[in-house]
Length: 480
Ligand SMILES: *Cc1c(COP(=O)(O)O)cnc(C)c1O
Ligand SMILES: [Zn+2]
Image 1: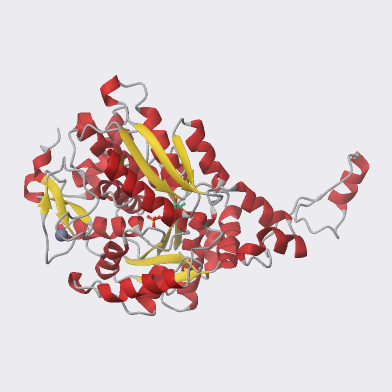
Image 2 (image 1 turned 30 degrees about the vertical axis):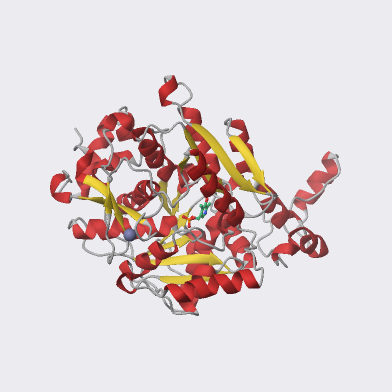
């Protein structure tokens, strides 16, 4: 059914280096030049459908796990593994939905704004799309332990996949080791790792510190690293774009808007479109907008203030190094309510520079107030998302305000994580007023909550309840 994996390999993204490596080598950087790695395919030796509609045939056989998975049903486009090595937990059953409330909020006509809702994944974020690919590769290499540093969702996903291997024969089990920063991880995410049985180390530092430590520990102890420096993960994340196309009847939208943390997702999206274009499966590549949080704006500043570009692989490394040196000198740390993108040293920075070139992309930043307001608007549509995800909607609003996106263009915002990942922030936003709000969310520069839907305290008394429900002076929109 599938091609032999020799028709795919690992390749350094630096065109001047271009070194290639076999699939079973476990690498997170090019050993020759330290560049990031891609998974590359010899398309002549892969059997790729001639039309994207051909993938629809797999709906009829969805009892087969590889056809049920929203990732592996596109296996011909990420065919690096034999079918019997694939580790799947039913990831990628997600949906694209037009959202009129969001369209109104950003100032675009109804029917032209879509949310790609990745919160529906088994562990509640898009990370499962990548983790299934990383676990499949880990299994191909015989790994017994897998580790990650995480702001939360990568660890939730890792823990869920590790749990799924627990019933396998001893030689095929993969144990999860999680490094998180202290006090920075959303409670829902920490809870998942603990519940799924992952070994969890809480480093006294932030994500960037945890990342540094997990890299060192993985190298020292030979543990398989599943952070997004892992090029296999990004292969799985390409499928989010295939599903967006699927949701739009295989017609590319004009814009893809995505929050940027470690910049793996945005990089994967560009690779997806680059390959589809090269294969003649799409006519047109959408534009990309990556949205940083203002308190974690390394990529935004490097691109917009320092003019760093991919430049065909000859990007200005000195400018990037100088930026980080200055950041360290000022002891500047990432700080945002959008904890999933609270990252100052994005590991896929160079790949994402390339993504901007491939998709004629732009980078924006959004402050925490705009992120939480956008989050409340997403919530009103009945889906809801965690704070980081709403950066995409806040970003689209800016694109319209700056007239970069015009009416008539179709935009897709990637909703990266589930509503229930960080409910404390949501409740605080909705129920606090004035000084209380400033006190609770003040460290994130949240000053107001224009979309608040506050619970109304009421006595445990039927007449009082009826009085409030019938009182027009009460602000609730509910008609008594
Ligand atoms: C990981 C994550 C992001 C950031 O994605 P990157 O690939 O690291 O840029 C955004 N939102 C959520 C909910 C995440 O879990
Ligand atoms: Zn190289």
